[in-house]
Length: 177
Image (cartoon, rainbow, N blue to C red):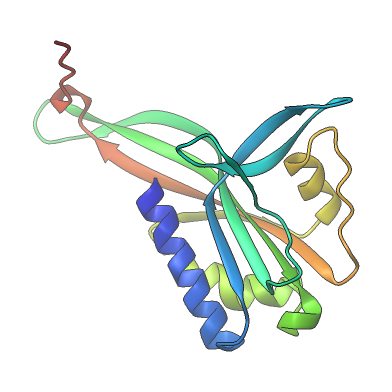
């Protein structure tokens, strides 16, 4: 999973440089997940959790023109025919890519960023599902029980895509000493 997300992140960063220019700072955050926080009330927000357990904020930064992160929504399994009598397992990951940008820095709006940067950066072997430009619904899905109010010059969009991986479960051996 980390490899495919890193590949997409590199492609998006390259597309930003090619489309908008070298001077635009962009921040790929990688793979995020909702973090539950208990304060005066209980809420959750997206963050990157490193191997030391530290959480890193993944949303807008006035120093960056554009940023994005990926989040695993679901994983499903099915079968496909293999060689001979064996069936192979198929793992399908449904992933959301959340993108934020500052239009006054990028000189672009959400629809243009999606069309010219994001969609061409997702390899064709991954299935595109849908794009969402409804900032309120994206924010309510990413920030649960917490009101995040984006600035007028800040846009937010999301793109859902699917990644399928075929594997042979019979070949995986678990050893315990």
